[in-house]
Each structure stands twice: as C-alpha cells, then as structure tokens.
Length: 249
Ligand SMILES: Nc1ncnc2c1ncn2[C@@H]1O[C@H](COP(=O)(O)OP(=O)(O)O)[C@@H](O)[C@H]1O
Ligand SMILES: Nc1ccn([C@H]2C[C@H](O)[C@@H](COP(=O)(O)O)O2)c(=O)n1
Image (cartoon, rainbow, N blue to C red; front, side, top):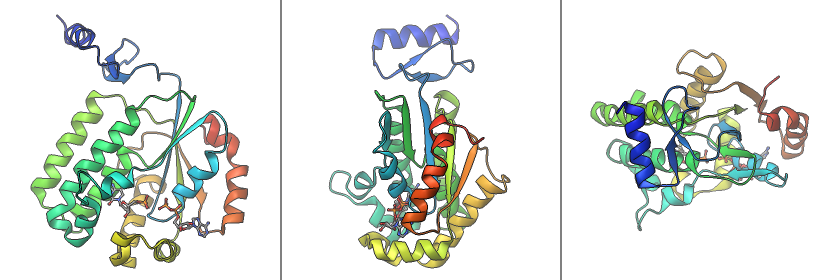
C-alpha cells in the first residue's frame, strides 16, 4: 500500500463519516466530508472587539451558518473552568486551556454544515498564533508546554485540511476593547489589564497587518471596529458582498 491507499482503506473500514482521505486534497491531507465547495470566513480580533456582535448580525442572513467560539465549554468542561483557572494562574493552567481550545476549534472547523457559507469566530490559527504565542512570549507558558502544544498544532495542520477562504479582521484599539470588556462583565475576565489587550493587539497587527510573524491562511479584509454599533452595521453592509463572496477585492 502507498500511504494514501492505506489511509483510504483504513478510513473506509472505520466509516467515521467525519473525515476521509480524498484525491482532491493535493497534499494528501484528511478532509471534511462533503464540505469541499463551502466558503469559510473567520472573524478575527481582540477580546471584546465585537466579533460575536458581528456574527449575530450576519446570522440573520439566509445561507450562512454562524459558529461562535465555544466559550461556554471553556468555562465548563465536566464541571471545571479552564478559562477561569488560566486567568488565575496562566503558568499552571495556560496549557490546559489552550489544549482544550485547540480541540474545540478543530471540532468547529471539521463540523459539517448544510449552509453554503460558514462564518466562524476566530480559528485554530488565531488561537495558536495569538493566544498561545502571547502566553509563551510573556514568560507565562513554560517552554515544554509551548513545545507540546506546537507539536500538536503542527501535526493537525499538516495532516488535516483546515481551509479558510477569508479572514475578516476587526481592528480595534485596546482601550476601546478594555471598556467594552468591562461593560460585558464576564466574571473570569475582570482581572484582565489593559496591557494584556495591548499585547494581543500587537500580535494581531504583526500577523494580519504587517504580515511579519506567521503564515496567513487566507486573504484578509480589515474592518475598523472602534465605531459605535450603528456605524459598525453600516460597515458590515458596505462590506457584505466582499465578506459573503469570500474575497477582499
Ligand atoms: N460597536 C460597538 N460599540 C459599543 N459596544 C459594542 C460594540 N460592539 C460590541 N459591543 C459590546 O461590547 C461587548 C463585547 O462585544 P462582543 O461582540 O461580545 O466582542 P467579542 O466577541 O469580540 O469578544 C459586548 O457587551 C457588546 O455588546
Ligand atoms: N485561544 C484563546 C481564545 C480565547 N481566549 C479567551 C479570551 C477571552 O477571555 C475568552 C473569549 O474570547 P472573546 O471571544 O471574548 O474574544 O477566551 C483565550 O484565552 N485563548
């Protein structure tokens, strides 16, 4: 057997109905069943930049399936709250939260949809390139934890096709995010200082604007997100065509 034939026959026997090896994946990666021609748009941005609000707005459009980040899972996995634990003690619990986030984001990327357009809040890429990177660079994630998470990430992205057609970057100032975060009043986030949002902002800018840090899996459409809700809706409408066609031109 060649590698591909062996994998095909194994998966055929397993009949997972979830992932299959198919010839159209030129790199021989595992691909989602029946999702080949569907558009995937990921909304990226700082904490409280307005991603969920944006997704809620577009969820009213027919033919779009919206997937918000599964924050409720991150706050309650079998009675544990890894999000809260991470904010209390990032060095101890950063790896726990980020391992679980990586799993839940992968699950979202691979879930099947009936709609032709899927709009997701962040991505497995943003989770790694922004949040894991921030924990590591700020000295709050031990090298061994970062190495193990990186090995997992590289295995996943090298062996499973995780297509993204367009990244919409909600570019916001950290100060505005901090104000919105305080208004939202999520219990675990009450201790987040402005400096944390500034660090996340810088990583996003390096990744999606300066394009100097990591691979960008799709073209980027930048939307300025500091405006009030009325103006944001206007911007969403102005960019509707581009967003829903998965192109930034
Ligand atoms: N353009 C806006 N102007 C003022 N408040 C906003 C705006 N967009 C969102 N908010 C509010 O800010 C908070 C964070 O928004 P949210 O959409 O949950 O952000 P994210 O999903 O990026 O964390 C929420 O309380 C939301 O109602
Ligand atoms: N990889 C990630 C993703 C998110 N978080 C944290 C940041 C927030 O406290 C919360 C939800 O994010 P939001 O949707 O409000 O931007 O989860 C993280 O620590 N790591």
